[in-house]
Image: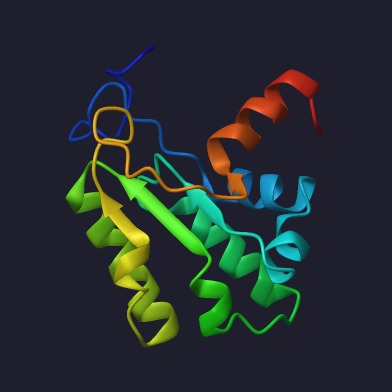
Length: 136
């Protein structure tokens, strides 16, 4: 991995930050909006700054779907970097004018201290499937 050309020198070498447009593509490619609206719980176990959750919320709103409290209660983020979660919280508050459900955010290492919750859909699995199937 080339890191000396990165404009993200303050990021850890292993951190990967997915562009919002790619996250939106995955949301549409796997029809996550309708699954979420139908009651699926969705988690990003390595959330970073919450790009996949942001993509899901933004794409749902672009389809004129009202993202209500019940839908938000089915979204979860797990991330070991507290600063990244603070950036997500700030984005959400600026976007929605209310805080994201705090009980749905876990600041922990998903491998070493797994919160042991079950979710219907996890973004890491979707990324894996998109690589295996060559989805486009």
